[in-house]
Image (tube, rainbow, N blue to C red; front, side, top):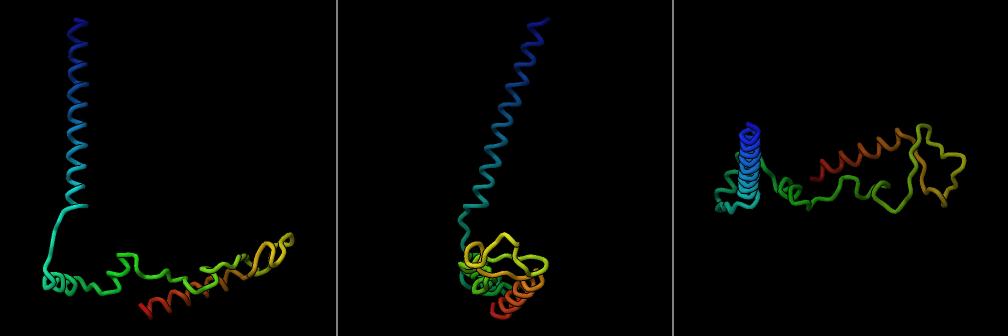
Length: 124
């Protein structure tokens, strides 16, 4: 009786192992088709898709990572060390030029970010 139960347990462990391996290989194969499938469209078909889904040239540049970050050109994308505090004052133990270059309040930071975002949207 013990041998029968041991055989049944071994059988089910093997079946689950085989099915698990098969499932993983099927999922990987399906993912490879999606990620590396060689689908090609003509220029006319691409133009139809762009028009149908309202895709712009900037959308394509964004998808390719060719557009700059919207904070480029601001103090947040520079070599300056910035401290942002609620009051706009630096901590007492910090020294300008040593620990930081610029101190600003949270409201100033949010205004710079919003201005940069608006300029980015207008440009792109």
